[in-house]
Image (cartoon, rainbow, N blue to C red):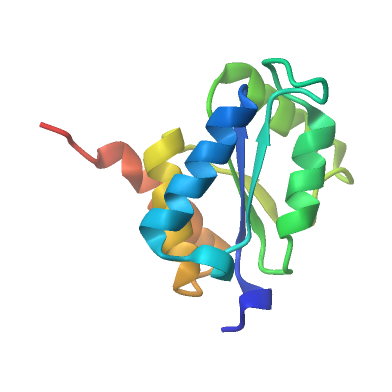
Length: 136
């Protein structure tokens, strides 16, 4: 599968620094580099903590390669913002999905899986399965 056909990933955090750092971590651990389109969408336009529908929509558009977009979020209002965008119907690329997954582990699993050329269902499933990762 060409790079143009990979699932895109958007990481939504209340913090621009957290979103960017998790994107960097996931791409670095996956060894995916430029092969998986990943975009952070953190904070507000003014650089404050929070979420921005405009930043999320722009991030989703930037990673859309026609194979779907997986959106992972950190906390409650980020989820609500993405759900509102999905309900609007025209703010996010077609085949955009909010994925229920832990933010860091899910992001890594999503990027690793997307780097194999997997479809949106497989990327979402891998990210969600990260809930099962035990640390002890």
